Length: 145
Image (cartoon, rainbow, N blue to C red; front, side):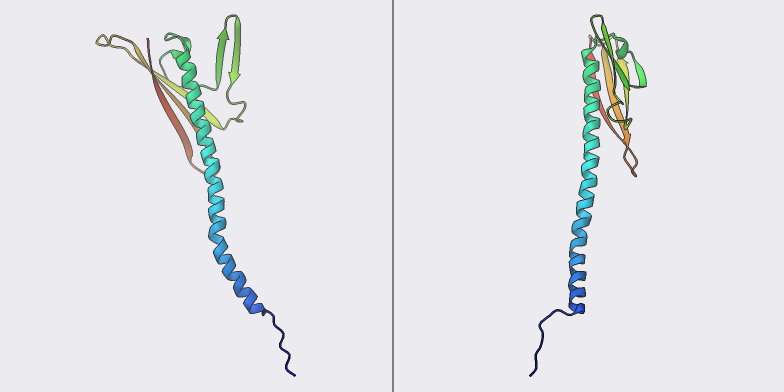
């Protein structure tokens, strides 16, 4: 009587495991790269929001306000807001633990040929992501008197 047991040999299991690993390796690589891309996009979106907020604050100030003076790339880590007799300072770096560096450049465009005075506001936010080069986002706005 010849009884043959039906089972997989160690060689068959090794080959199946190797094929499965070859098929799953690209999927795992894709998943890790997509999570890195998500983190990169998160910081870029936050940087765009910071630029937009800085420009909105500048646009809300009078044309000759101290913050609106012509300047070359000035740091904007803290913003002062006045409401009547109340003066409040906001530290923008506190929430992000100094991930972002915010700067503002204001250029004055005045000419006798133009009927209005113009100022160009350029907000720039820079940050370093782990293991990558320095990245930045810039936005510009034009203000008239």
